[in-house]
Length: 421
Image 1: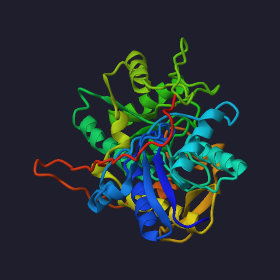
Image 2: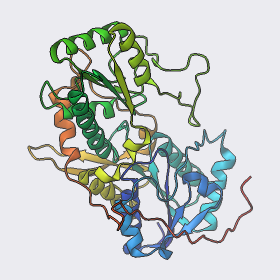
Image 3: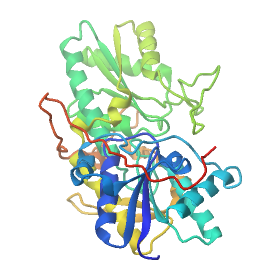
């Protein structure tokens, strides 16, 4: 790779509490390397590249870059725009390459999930076919923790810490007022993988502790069995706290909450889910005849910087930092992975996986992490997640007693190409 080529960084998909920590790692490592020219930010992921909506990171104050580690969501702006195959989206891919050429971009760092890794891989292939010297590196990001080839994903430890704590707190509320609200259902994210739901099981330190029942997409869901599970816990404790992942599936593999009339989909083609807590609430009130409350955390669970995992912040930064180091060592077309080293004490290092492999893979909660009844987690899951939630990420508190988050100045780069469609 020629020295002094410029680098671009972009963020994609659902934000997390620590995706900005990864960006901080990329920006700082690239700037101090002496082998990369300008560091450029793309507004709203690959859409910012297509629209040539770019800004100069060198115009940002050092303290702004540092504050990325204490700011949730995607500070550069994210998107859910998916480039399809090279044949179907050829014009878009060629536009990306034209923008890179116009701004002498030789390094492309893309933080995201499966679809983002697919985009980076295809951009890399097109550049190679065109004879354009380009290094593409993926940085893992997803609260769902479903990326293959990595022990866990930046963003997951923080959401795990937050949802487990929410279950603990709301569980105590249910315990205190069980004569009025005998049952509480907490709905969490997780379309196809139950990692977030499983994390709440860490809160159950004793049989009395919430959650008493945890349901994940990996364990086929039966309404009849569910009613029996609820009745058993009620008989034992007089109350029940339930956690349900949004992507629960029945024995035939169908989403129990998918709208059979429309099957509405998002821009990535994924079925829009939601409402599992309300649905289960209706079942309990009809079949068990007890008052039930449903809670839905929504986007709060993925942007809860006020209780983010320090382990997560540090590892996310390491992923961004290592993406630059690997790129400067000649590594290309790879995603940085997190590798849990063997031993009695938790230690995490980094590895590499092919972008195309990550794009086409999916990591589910292993069966050994789910109990035989399919309604809670095992000690193996507790051992997996416990080290990830350690430490509290520092945040800046303002005079009004609330957190202070950074915002980029966004000094725009001069556009050199015609307007994008």
